[in-house]
Image (cartoon, rainbow, N blue to C red; front, side, top):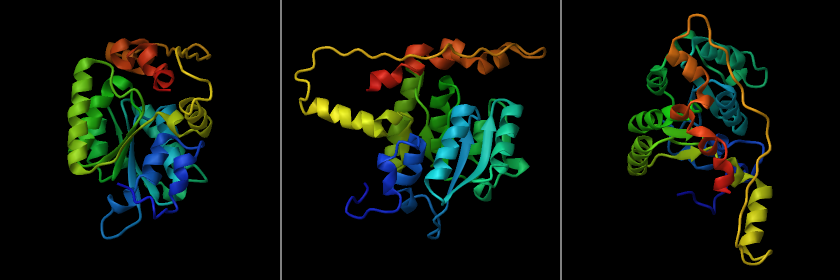
Length: 255
C-alpha cells in the first residue's frame, strides 16, 4: 500500500487529466519502491502493441516521470514496430530517455514474449483486446508490473485467464493499471462525488451516450493472410474486439 502521509513528486498523477492510466501506474502507485535494483530510480518499460493508443500510453508514461525509460517495442506487424521505434527515437522531447536498439524491436504474433523477456520493469500493452489475457498472464508470471488498455478480455476463457493472473499478481505484489481514464478525470470524479452526496436526489435511471465518428477500415494487402487481415482490422471482429459495447462503450458502463 502507498503511505499517503509521505507524498512524493509522483503524487500529482492522481489528479492529472493529461495523462492516461498507464502514466498513473508508472508514477503514482509507488513503483519506485518495488521495481528497481540497487536503489535505481529508473523505471524501464516495454511497449506491446504499437498502434495509436499504445504509442500514446507509452508517451504518457514517459511524460509522467523523468525516471521512465522506453527500452523495447513489439507489434504483430513489422512496419508498426519499426515505425514506433523510429518515432520515439526521433521525438525531441523524449529521445534522451529512449533506448531501443534494433534487437529490441520485436514483431510477429509472439513478439510479446520477447518484449516481456527483454529486461523491462513494466509492460505497457494496447494490443487488440482478444490478445490481452494471454499477454497479461505472461507478464505477471514473469514478475512484471502491467498497464493494459481496456477492455481486459472479450470472452469467458479470457476472463478466467485474467482472474487467475490477478491472483498471482496479488501474491507477487505487482502493480496493475487499466485504461479507465475517467476514474482519474477531475470533471468525472467531482460530478460522481456530488451524485453520491445526493445533489440530484435518489438515482433511479442512468443513460450514457457517446457521439463519435465511424471507425476505421484498413484494406486487405495483396500478400496478407486472413489472420493478418483480421488482426489489422481487429475492431471489426468480435473475437479480437469484443464488439463496440465491450471495446468502447465500456467507458460509459464504468461511469
